[in-house]
Length: 355
Image (tube, rainbow, N blue to C red; front, side, top):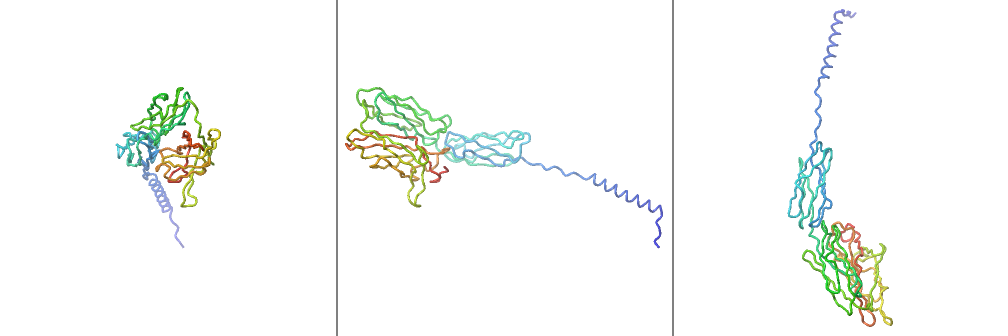
């Protein structure tokens, strides 16, 4: 039979168990807490919009941090090629914010890497193309009765820089033009009025000039006392609407492109007893195509990648196309040139275009 434990032995065992429990609780309460994790604020990315600009224009840069900037942060900025593009020395991220913006200014054609630095560095590439130059000077009519007006249009090779492009204008009697016309910033063309005085005879080939950054373009206007006998008139339309032409892919594959619009010269006219025998068309974007027809309409005018700029103009969503028409009648008389310089042309992602 097992011997019963004495009261003293039981009391000693109880004290030992209580001491072990108290010791375990003390060890638990005195454990060292895990220190909080700290995050180093750094630049996570840099973006530029747009990533391609013309000299003299600007792009907006955006710095992104990996976490909100507690108390704010100063991010250093630099350009790898300051003769091409410049940036401020830094940009400030507000307290609690995670992004900040800055301005990139295009100086000359080329590329530059734009870097942002804060406990590390990130960069993005900006492409700067040459400053926009004067491309064309066109008139809405090439013959006018003295005392009436026509419209002139100046076009640039790309969007005008910040502040616009001021084009100097000049002409000789009996034609009057403003001293200048301004192409607004971001636009590539502008129109201006051309007025004439009443004349007693015919002034042939009066010169109108436009000058910008060392480039001069000219156009000629004839001022008469009587309306011309043969008059060219036309319209442009297609599935995209009036004044809209879209470039279609080759059909069949490997063939030539075309425009999905029609040039319609039905409204052209000549003197009683004569008929129009030839419609002479031309259409220009960067290159020029021409075609003569013996009927008044030209459906699906021919086009290919050579018609449009090799590189999409910065910021453009469509291209400007200029369509011209002269007509010849059965007596051999040739009309003045009719011009539509506001036709919209859409490459439709052909030829490497994004639109």
